[in-house]
Length: 201
Image 1 (cartoon, rainbow, N blue to C red):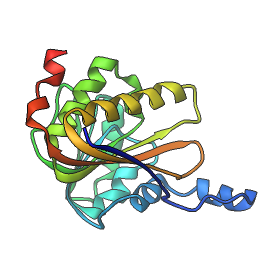
Image 2: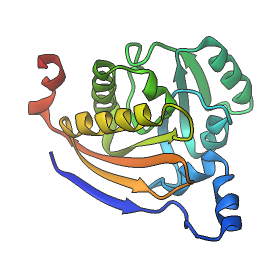
Image 3: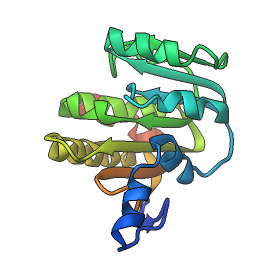
Image 4: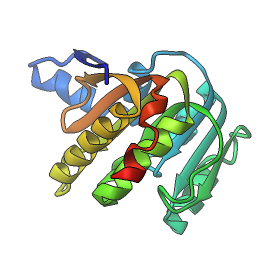
């Protein structure tokens, strides 16, 4: 595993209370986009719906945008938001079991990772490793202000560690809005000798 950890910024954190408040109320889509390595993507997968309609805002940056979630009502709301985005769609699916058979150059993981057990997180990392095209990225963006802070931090760490066993990665933790985990994992080439890691574990 070639894991490089560096700290970056998706925005400037300041000490002045008024400036921090203005920064923290920016839409999630804007915060996410600040950390993207590209202006446009061929195919994007968002795992888990968000309450603020992030998909509808980010879909314009992709040729194809797919949202998957296991909650029927969340998918219904997402479909309504995406009505004016012909390149985007939302699909109900069990995560990580019902994984789309397609290659993506960007995968977004949301708060949904806190609902997964360790085995499911490792399988999720394997699915991501197999689905990401070479030199593409995985972004984790989670709310840390509620009672699931520790679960989400642990889940993100598990995914990063597991993904690093399958591909060479470079991880950046962004100094984004206070109270949120925002990190980007750049996935390099696949390590074929490690493809069976999870199946053997």
